[in-house]
Image 1 (cartoon, rainbow, N blue to C red):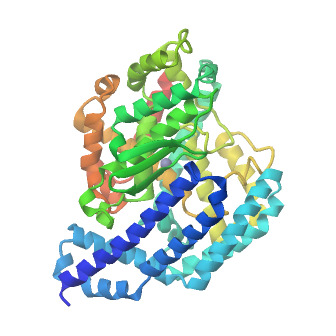
Image 2 (tube, protein in one colour; image 1 turned 90 degrees about the vertical axis):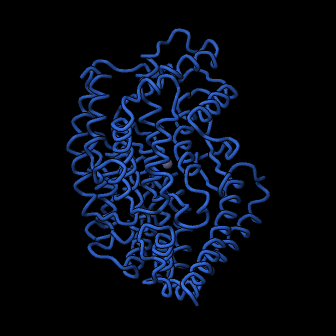
Image 3 (cartoon, rainbow, N blue to C red; image 1 turned 180 degrees about the vertical axis):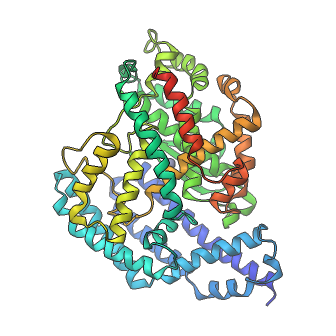
Length: 503
Ligand code: ZN
């Protein structure tokens, strides 16, 4: 067998797995948008069948043989050529999937299914005791999983790298320390500022059909290609890349809330622009796939916060909003509106947190889950540790565990090591935006005209088209000239909010 024959077979097999996964994605999208309730049971059978097939195909020993054949061959000599990238990335996922024994995978799937229900009940009743035994079981299973995977340093890193290859807690800790040191005083200064926005103007009656129209128009203006995508409604906003030419996003509308649907749309458009910008020639292989969870999140945060919450953006969009929401904003100025969409206040809820406090929510979760996996913190001590961390970082404490350590479902689903990707995404977003402004000149005038083509073109060139060619930190370094760094995020937030709140 020549290396080329082996490679062709590898790519054909990878393509089959990608097809199965895209069928799964389409069924998943349908489940939360249009499927009638009566379809639930049959859908569960379809999904389980596809998941089984996908697992079988992605752990087929033949893949291991092909990879071994190719590694070291001249075909992969150029490490940045598509063939080498595909072999490297397919090896990584093959190893991850085959190193953890099947009984452990099944035990984890079973336990987390029950744990998710227990977590929902516990959160509903604000009774941590109902969830604690499940957390203990999951922690034990996750430690076993980590032990099956190759890692250096902490067991936590093995789990972290499941979501963000290459990230280590040792590299993350100083980034989080910087954020904590710089952002905590900023949050306190903002809370104490006499100048505060009027939030009520975002809570007026915004007719749902007008919101849908405004979100659709905005998505198209930002560059979302509706010939290759859709925007629908779902309880939880998300972006699902079904395949080349088909990327679907969702949002949710609330009558008395302008921000919820609009900013969720911007966020998902950011994810979708990335998916619509990867190279279709490499579809079904890692070269044609988004780089990492954190790079993905950098794209959504860049469009949501750095573009969509900027002053120039609202110079263009506020007059449009005033026309679309007839009569609703007649007594409001663009400055008042811009201030309202940039409100900062310590809160107990991560999902609804603003972009200054958001990373404080993440960093305390990182510290807690790292300690839980290491065994330095027991599940019994978690609620008290959560309180203490909120007091220390945000100056507020939850009145019960539903608002506290039961608020996120990640741990019930076994997703330890996922939270840091949110913060890495915001750091990367700030670095990328700063670099784009450096390369393209002041972006303000273009954004103020509703012209996003320059910025999108830059992101296509520096990030999107590379797919999984580089490790995430290398991609950031090549695009921005610096390794992952909290500086641009901290500087950007300080500059913006010092001015807004007249600190
Ligand atoms: Zn996101």
